[in-house]
Image (cartoon, rainbow, N blue to C red; front, side):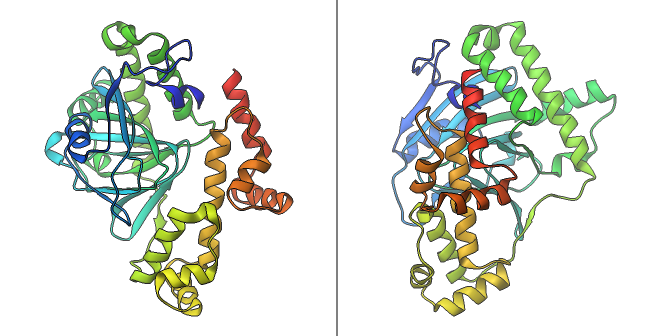
Length: 342
């Protein structure tokens, strides 16, 4: 993950670089000017209290793909992506979390190392990013990917394929391995990637990998989380959880924010989310700890990161973490350290 985390913002010597910087601004018009070019026109609004963004966008070309590193710096909802642009995206979460929507009643959540694939020229899509989000994205041209499909698989793609959205990646996955290689090439051989045969080689590798994954997911049941439209008090509590999970708000605090009684909030969460409010809060906190473990600085410890997220009993926290992610938090931290020093 280290190569992905540093792409476009560090040079081959590990020093900070702005060679690929397109915008760093708190002005919506400045951000929109560049994001429309790198991605496509879309609408973006802050989630919760209206705030000015703290956005940074870096980007480079790999054949017909554009690889970008992007954040808004505040929680946002993005919708109404322009199909006329003829592009799609692979959004890989580098920090924080995202909730990707393709239908009113379903969503897919991505955390650190997870990616989401969508052809915006063919299907409806919108996304919520939390305040801590940071993405490494690949924008692709539909026509170029369609031609690549026909060249490699010997026939035009089933039109259903482009309608399918799906999640891929995760720690140790082929996607993260491929993306790490691509990012190392960009960092160490930027000119060869942008103007030489290496760029065409990477373009082909990325495209064929994505198309192979797309074919695999075409006839599989969608691995999405079921979602029921919830009343305002549930949404208000969820928003407070997303924005304040690090401080471990109490159940009474969540109920007060939602404007209902503790009992009413609990009933609503069980009915519409299949869990209690505190279970939803615990999930958000565990995801937050995991994200920081996977991007931790050399001096960080499991205890210090867990404490920052309100887990005072380290043994109890480690048990919860292992049950949720099938590994101890120390293993997550060591794996990141091994990647950092490899």
